[in-house]
Image: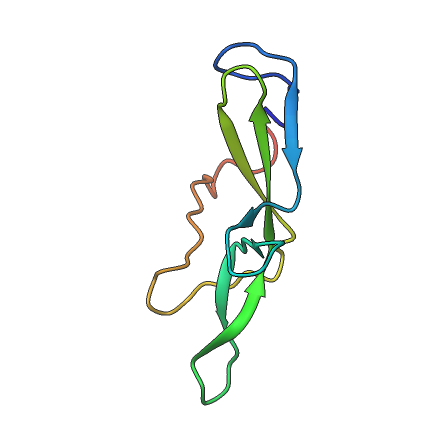
Length: 98
């Protein structure tokens, strides 16, 4: 949806962009939704509020289909408990050329 600028479900060309995407909270503006709301800090306290990244939402004005896209997540780190991890499906033997 983001790349094609059309809805993959109905083909609609009118899209709402909500950036940053926020979830309801007790403040009028809502709370920005983070990719990872609690990230390891490396100190004696294992986790603290150290949000990483955010989301933008594309919403089809015709059918309501929506897609979330993560952004600003370069500082994301894997967590030892496996709850945040990178799945790398690239073939190390393939190289950059085909």
